[in-house]
Image (cartoon, rainbow, N blue to C red; front, side):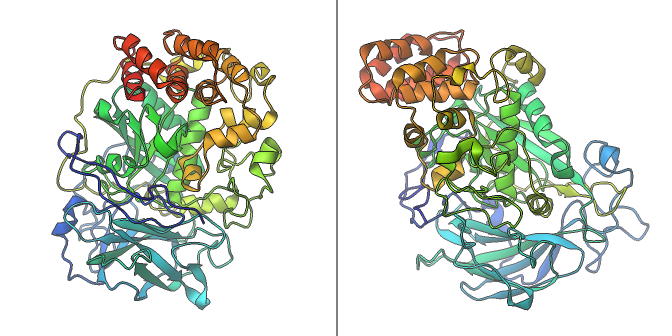
Length: 607
């Protein structure tokens, strides 16, 4: 196993009021496999820590005597307003009313002892469950906590030593950790087997006194134990002017409408300040704190930024843990972070790939091929870098480069996503989805809501990109490149790969793309996909001893307002890595650039 993504430090703690960093960076432990990007909700201090074995039912239900979701007259007990887009009004996924049983149930085990197996009875009708361990602190913690072991009926072991054998899983994190069943394809997990499960909370093996820890188990159920659909509510957070509201909403609908049989419910947009334009591994847990107080639960929080940096450089998306947490906002596992390219097909794969991680899916094969997902029906590649698109799992959406953009999934992958806790479920054929749980108490979602930045919607972006080329379109831009290099440039480089130790530029060099002139040619080519142009220009500045003409061209491309924003940002990255002096000169030149994001990123790169 490799070192975690944040090996030695966390990040500046931002204010919940305005999202600006404050405080000092502090040391955090390091251990293999995980991102160590986790925390607890500030409101956790208000929990009754003496409670044990209690039950809270979500998806709009308050139980009566441990069952049901209705008052004595047959009406719903939920106080959440209902509307046609979010509740049991049916639509294309069901025409019935409120579900007769709650689709999602929390078993709150309260405060638990570290290292002691806790029994949880899981009844028939369950599709799966997510176990969440949290440190009971008044504000998000950076101390390690997580799920050390899960065993189940018949002595079956589902997780041990915070991991699943053969994967890069790490079920502990900073202040919060999660694991799910099913996450494997073994017969005892798919289909799900009811019975008594034993869950052990641990401190990640660091021997650090973690303080009081709380364990909750979120169980998804239907009347017959089969999937019947549901609605995904989404909180979209836009950093600065990374995207327009119109494009963000369109991209989310395109990616998630119909995904694994689910429908898109409510989309709520929030705006974060420009200080969140670029997110690295240290700021990742902090930007996730900005989701505190977001609308509804369960819900998927999607944070759109202009660029990922640090050890996440050139990645298009990152999920803090596999799985992450959709039932609480403001924790260090409460969402995914993406840098979308306004290229609809590629953005769909980015969003689906990261949601796959969020729900509990691993890469079908890792760049280090000794690791792969634990499923029985996904193919495995002997060498991702050497074989590229010849890999038998290349078409799969969870291939480490996002595959061929077709978004294929296997039945077991689909079952795992359907069993997770990020959506409002339907419990019977023809039924309706339950109402959301009310918003988290406490502070509002990070960042002030403001007017939507001007930008393009999905249809406009699709039209603008006509003729530019996509993964399935014009391939002339790949002629001068080795095939594996083209696959890397246009694929979805995932933050989980960075967490496992993959360096995109090193992978690109190993694939034979080391010639600065060839990379510049890709960056100039309007037929190349935007992400390929951006990565090629960033890599051109890292080529061996880039010449003065290479530096001059990177400067010219970065300053050219006709280029897509991401291509300009790639040129800025390449120039900054090749010549700090040239980057400073460029920053002065771009200080008043019409694209404020480009100007800010040039200034940051020159520091």
